[in-house]
Amino acid sequence: MAGKGISKGAMWVLMGLLIVGLGGFGVTNLGGSVRSIGSVGDAAIDVNTYARALRDEMNALSAQRGAPVSFAQAREAGIDQRVLAQLVARAALEHEAGALGISVSDETLRTEILAIPGFRGADGSFDRQAYRFALQQSGLNETQFEQGVRAETSASLVQAAVLSGLRPPAAYTGAMIDWLGERRSLAFATLDRGDLETGLPEPSEEDLRAYHEAHLPDFTTPEARRLSYTWVTPEMLLDTVEMDEATLRAAYAERADEFNMPERRLVERLVFADEAAAAHAMERLSEGVTLDVLVSERGLDMADIDLGDVTAADLGPAAEAVFAAPVGEVVGPVETSLGPAIFRVNAVLPAQVTPFEEARADLREALALDRARRVIDTLGHAVDDLLAGGATLEDVARETELELGTIDWHEGIAGGIAGYPTFRRAAEEVREGSYPKVERLEDGGIFALRLDGIQKPRVLPLDEVRDTVRARWRAEATVAALRAQAEPLAEALRAGRSFADLGLDATEVTEITRRDYRADVPPDFIETVFDMTAGEVRLMEGAERLFVLRLDSIAPADADDPDIARIATALGEQLTADLGQDLFQLLADDIRARAGVTLDQAALNAVHANFN
Image (cartoon, rainbow, N blue to C red; front, side, top):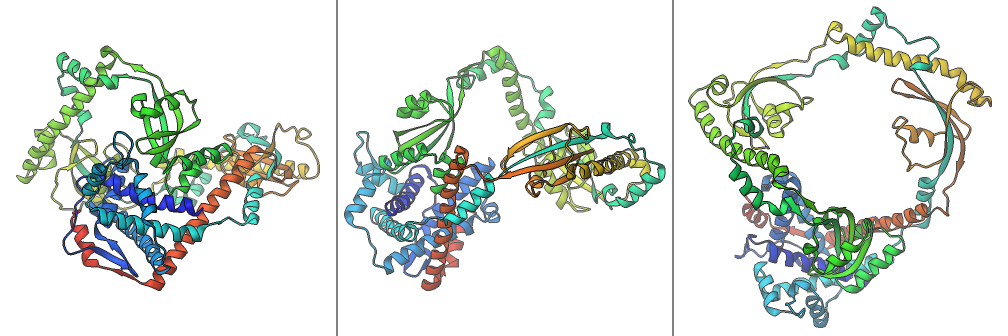
């Protein structure tokens, strides 16, 4: 356990700095006289480390959203506080390691650095030039980097010592397995409007009025903002864009790789520090531990190891093993440029060949959309000039390709232009008398809007919602009539009669568990079944249906069920990881309380200023 903790902790720093150095060009080295943003006891938090970690998190958020993220947006998402909390926790462990006199030998340091694949040359041996280049790009010298490795590895020793031997209580995991694996057998019959002995209920005028009065909130319009707007999107201009044959064929040639793709695989890859760790992971997989658990133990999400669809050329030495593996199988370890790795194949995508004639429509649409966006860019400046000159939205619609529209907007509307987040935000913020301005939609379109007034909530009269009121009254009345009809049947079942005796067509369900799902019953079916006692009969309402349930038996979890064994293993692994995280947090909090935390707000502001 201790060895595992050291490797994981050290490699976190080493690979993090290496990735930033080799792929994160553009990160500002703050330098100057400011060296740290604070400290925990004797352990300082390096200013450049904070800047790099902040940049990494912002890049990850940008990739997730599919658009660049500003520092203001990152701050709104809490990224700066999350990064700071992580670095403070790490500094706490570094302080504790120093206080305990824990250090790392030169030989251990050398071994860790030599093991990093990114520092190796073409022949696989350590390459000092690659080492210096990576550190230079990350804004570090060798002394700073090696001090960081020593500190992080020592901190990992402290963490590993605390978490060593951690296991969840057997009684806790046992209770969870008993709860998840408990089995119940039952029978149920379904009654719908076709089973009504009294016929389908028909409401009187008084019934409708009473229902309407009792449910006024359901028939009250929300407050709405009456908006006038003018807009245009690339799709709205498609028919006006001309595209000649030569342009389409040239685009097809440029995108030949897209239209003529080799066989691909949807693959996940988990990289390890060394061959032994990777081999141990494969052993655990063979024992029933899932890949999801291995990923979680590394502090990663499944998205972090997803390579998407890859070709054999993308995988290098791993191609042969991955492309020979069936879907769902984990293969490896295989040596990669990042180190030993295991791979899981999630799907096979066959080779795809699309001739020009089949690709023509897609090519024309893509090129036309691109050209339409450029037209809209020019239009945006023209519309800005018109509005600045006093033109109304109606004038803009008459003089340009933009279309005029009106909408009574509220949060519940999401169709048309109201489906764009940018429009929804502008509709919420606009005020009466505000100057209309051009704003850009997410698909490259533009719009400008004006607030014409605010409509207060209004109760819709019965005549306007009569059909809806009738349908809802009938649905409730149908279930009520079915319940009245089913109550004597339920009593008879409780007295020992069978479903067949009562003329009911029953569905038998055996050994259902809390993990099961049925599409033919209401969403709370499982919850209801596991709330019943053996022999109990209960009525459960559905959409214009009534379910008559009888719970026949309750059985404990099946100890011989392989699914239960796998769940128990995965649950134990997950609980261990959760307990470890909680214990680590308690440790870090205790160290911070004893050592004291100091933060330099001026240094933090200086870092943040580089992101604005």
